[in-house]
Image (cartoon, rainbow, N blue to C red; front, top):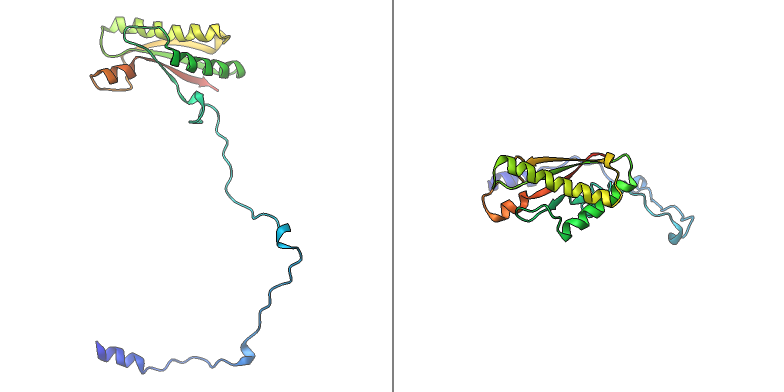
Length: 170
């Protein structure tokens, strides 16, 4: 290996000679405006404006009203959510929602369908009392057929006792 390196060190490279005549001085153009007056650089990043229903920071991002076991009474935290969505619907007459009532896995099929419908109707009635026209709302029951959580414990059951506010049109 040493012999290979030694051979490389003795090889002459054919490089053209550099003369002073080939060097051209480069001068900076004279500044026409002081640095403070120069325009800000342009960026290619565009700001994105999210629709209120898609903005995770908006109160409208939450779409589920949760209920206690065997109940269709809207809890205080659920009322806040119902009020937010009602305000949006009042300001957007062309928007409509489908209120989907759900129940946990406990109880019979008919019982859970009835409970899911009572929950959906409770949210619809609350929105109606806040001024939302009936034509903007539909309430249906899914019973226990569309669980958010598939566990068989209290935490899972609590996530499944809900009404989902699903926008059909914006």
